[in-house]
Length: 354
Image (cartoon, rainbow, N blue to C red; front, side, top):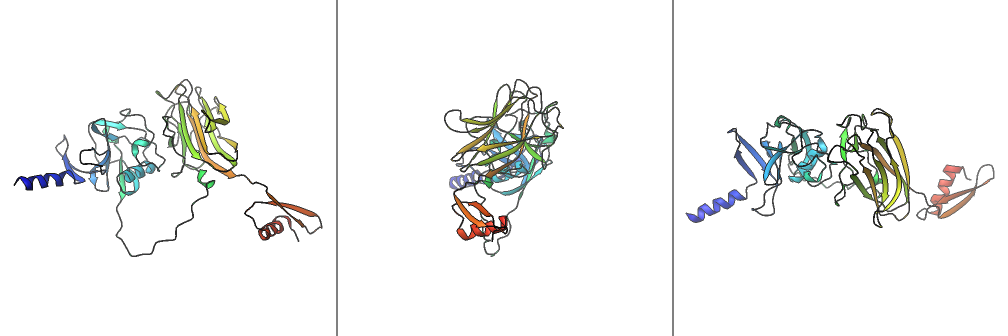
């Protein structure tokens, strides 16, 4: 009898779906993340729904708590589903009220993070919410397998194309892991009065630095991306507010790095004022680019960026010559990978060579 009891105990410890009784005497189905051992507490779970949907709850400092739905969107939901070992992710707000601590608020994920706790948020236990605002998600249920052939993989974007991001979906710019504050993805106006843009430059979403306490004074917000070729980095920026600090593009390396571009202070006169465009020359052989927003001396210092693009530089390493229809000689430059035949064809198309 002792053996049978021990086997049942082990089975219960290793079952990922359990039924728990809340203080209101109701029962809820709870789905948790897998853990390394049976003695480790899971870090995230869904409650009040099904295996694939429910209210999001996170485990921190020895207690489970909920997440407020301020700024909650599909990018945040995708991270939750990924952390639970599922796919997809749609933001939902109603799976019943939670109880206890509200751990997270103003969550702003890019959508590519592995853990919800890696996204930007207001700080553990910092919120202005009630449990009626508890956030939820719906993940995709796995489809029934079918014996269809694997599709031909799409070619990966070039290193230069990978830098392009309009923040409408997830992109490959990341928050660094060395202790700097994270930029927040948002649509419409930033939460604080008299600072930040009214809306995105293009589309619905943009990134911004939340300058409210305790994020000032002189706190740095950083996103970064590797780059291996020379070119031009362009993006739009909005710096409205009497406490705005500075915005810089920095090439990492050599201590604090090399500042390639920098502006400071207020550059717009209102939230509805037009965004400005920046274009920065990136030298050959670069390794890591960082966009650094620094808060000023007060909460009215939100800085926003949108629509990052990178244009690879054209390096003249060869020359082709031909004669156009008027008899004038035309010189056409080409890259090492361009064959002579391709060069002649381009010359004909561009210059009317004969």
